[in-house]
Length: 419
Image (cartoon, rainbow, N blue to C red; front, side, top):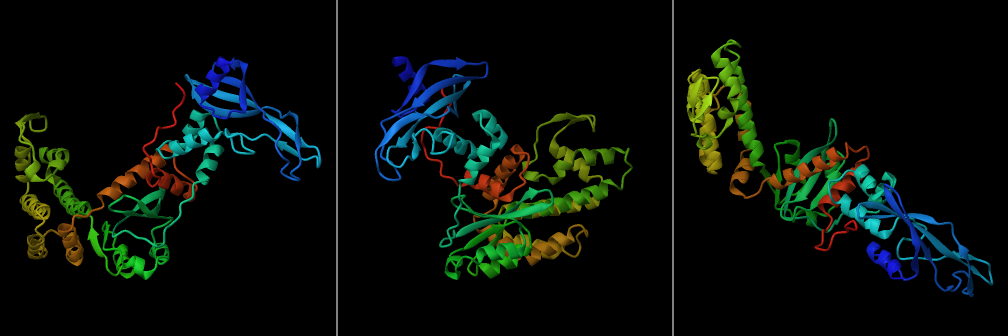
């Protein structure tokens, strides 16, 4: 008897009506335990008459959590009961599994726990010795409800890739990182229809919206959230400057012969041109391109000596970076206004964009908000999609994201395999 109690304790089965046999089978891949579910006959659910014990059902196969590295299968015989009055048949019930199901509750909880991680569906099914369809059924039990009576004061907008060539919209609470909306598309119509479900009073609560430099969002945010300030992400502002500087470097590099020393040096050390000059390393290393020991600062000076045009724009680029990182918006825009007519044509579209979006860039410099948290969320979304080798169904993808990012992860003991 102690041996049988040990099996129940090891499997963490609390149902007192389930008893295990002494015999069990051990295979190279799994163990099979044999059990019976039996108790006194209950009242008939149909006529409330007295039922009597009848026979046992054919053993049902219940996959369980692994124990000592072996997958576990329980073959459970359930007692059947027959009503003496109306002849109705009933089957014994247990807390181990739900009625008319074969997957135990503890395995369903383990599936949910794994779904909250970034594990692929097929891996979850393989680890728990169940089918992928079972994992999807557990995922579909999760329902995400949108609270139309609340919106955060500080919101972040961005897009992510659902399929190749198809972008989707995501909105997140800046303070709590809670996902507010995941939409199948990023068109103005899709976004507008979603947020118009909220009342004007709820939308008036939003004070700040951070976003990248995707211009269709600007007027949309203004029309939906009258009290909100639009803040451009600082990374994307610097990125526009950096790309213009890189295009100029390539343009100047292509003026030299491909076998020349200047061409090779400008091509190899392109990152030093992009880098903030205040962060350039002063450590000396041997540089094969120059065949001598040089610091990064010395290499930059040699690269700039190849072209006066490159040197002039490099100094302008570094000065703009300095004003931007010091959050000196006045000096930043004064310099742009001063140089916008004399600067290389590659920089002019960037300067025009900055002047057009001046108010939003000033907000980025004055307010402590950015899209950094949402970009981190997008990275997690990419990991989920990559581990799953992509999703065909948008709703399944959306549920995975919300389970991984919005589901409350309480500080309780995890459901572990039996050791």
